[in-house]
Length: 346
Ligand SMILES: Nc1ncnc2c1ncn2[C@@H]1O[C@H](COP(=O)(O)OP(=O)(O)O)[C@@H](O)[C@H]1O
Ligand SMILES: [Mg+2]
Image (cartoon, rainbow, N blue to C red; front, side, top):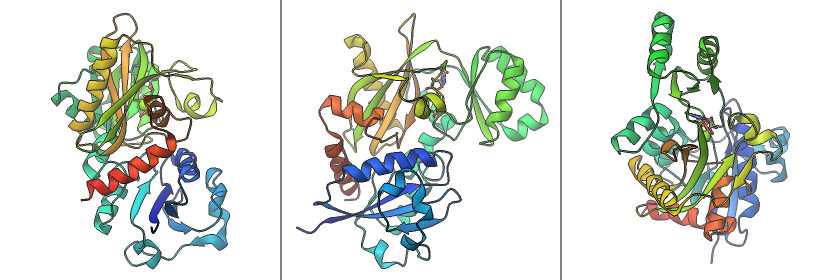
């Protein structure tokens, strides 16, 4: 049997570039080389594309980009034999310019099957404001929020502050609309912090979202499938800091704790798993997503937080861990995702 040629796309012009390197190197390591033939395609932080033919170990620490003699720079994704041969792509990219429908659009134009959500679901999943609107339409429970565009902030910041103070109050969360890994997110406890937080969030996007703080436990559910998706067991994250920021996600050497399965009643567990599937269907998900929830500590009230169409994918990341506990190993998960990519393309 001839091998399936898989194009792994990694890196990306995104603040989550380094996270992608970690995810991609884990995916590459776990792929069955008897079954799959890999072509690795790297995107540097400036957005330049390369076919990378060097050793895979150099992907994790970013040194692949210095491996000049193994980089093919001059190629077109539309006219290159190496690219033409690829049967299926796996864009292991997080954040804008990769998880947001842009690369998915390119792959559509190339006419190739690819792992994960399509253009629409990826774009919606990346935009926290659009996502909330769709969740609302689907009847999913969520906290209060306001979205602010930079052009309006520049015109009348006082009015926006007033509106946030009366409709949301403190503490509140300020986030760029299109980002991930907690980049640009802050928790504001007063007006001063709110103004600073808004300015910070505008560094990353022209649109931001301000949300009411929820005194919560953080619960996550993995979804896998196309037309008939399945939901995993639930996991809980106990952040090492006041909230799950970039540092506690990736840099604190595992001080944030993942508890799988999450210690929740059967009733709440089932509700969340159903909400996860509803959210996935609402955005038109394919392949995979991780759906994140808040459960209010005092009342057990459930709120949906967000959907991640390309969740962290290292072997210690929540998404693959949740499936492992549900009965699908990291290795089998990759096989399943590639099968789903072909199935979606039928
Ligand atoms: N409304 C909220 N109430 C309480 N904590 C929040 C709220 N929004 C975000 N957080 C905290 O900030 C973290 C990052 O926010 P999130 O919306 O998940 O952004 P990202 O897409 O970067 O993961 C969450 O995991 C949680 O710890
Ligand atoms: Mg999150």
